[in-house]
Image: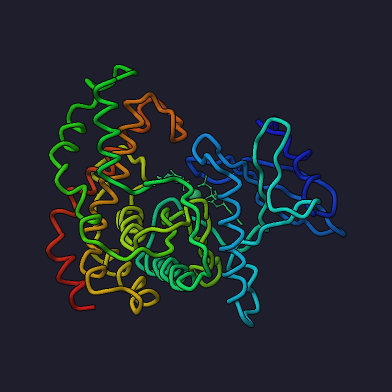
Length: 361
Ligand code: ADP
Ligand code: GN1
Ligand code: MG
């Protein structure tokens, strides 16, 4: 296969032994370039994950890698006696000069992780057990990082979940309409404008700052093939100071509806209450003790707001001519926006019931 990058040459920069076998693009992330790379070591196949960090989006890859190094080391220090601890946290492979990333001749930044075998990520949730497991894993992740020693982590993308700022960027994109697409998205633009009032609710609530993951979508947690356990939280680029509500909100967005993020048949999109219940129970089982009353009360709302915010970001990118998220078809970002907004409506219809449930947990 002809790859966009010379992965074999990159591999020589890292502490990997054995013969290069093959490399193939991997996963369905929207931001970085990910490859699964195989080597043969003493007759055994060993796999690694290679990633090129998208430095158009992450403007300071060095600071980002410093965060990831600190976070993975902290999690590893807490792994204790766990027999399979190397599957329960990401492990960075060192470069030959003793660092954690390699900068190639084209200016790209690369990192390598041990491949977590016998576990998978899923683009759409299949059962309440999966929802519970994902939420439990993300809650545990947050709790384990609560005592990360100072200094504060770098903000890898400033104001990442700042919905009022996202809204201002959206309004600017309508005004500029560089791709001449605003006329094709008028129902979605109106939907967004009708929701302007909810944008600042989480910021106004003065919730405590924590170390959060900030991209807790369902395909950023690996579920064990045998036990179904949420074994490892991945995709650590946006681990930085944030609100617990951001993390729970993105779980609601990606784990309560059985449809994929870009599903075109909107009749398949909607919050399934049992999924939400599993999610809330899973998350509170591992993060519940550290959360304040105000944080708990806002969990259902955070699902609505984060779903709205990501929908708004897809819509903004559609209007701006698809410059941020990877797209694979015409109108892809608009399709993604529509599923998010449909889910927001579904959450609105069930919000009262969601609030009542969280009160009882
Ligand atoms: P992106 O930021 O582009 O979403 P991710 O870090 O989420 O990139 O990686 C993309 C996909 O690669 C994941 O959904 C997962 O399936 C797979 N992946 C990432 N890291 C590992 C790992 N250490 N072991 C096995 N698979 C992994
Ligand atoms: C991006 O990297 P990935 O695909 O897990 C995005 C998230 C969005 C998500 C929508 C750095 O996540 O914020 O919620 O797409 N990551 C970044 O699927 O912007
Ligand atoms: Mg990902």
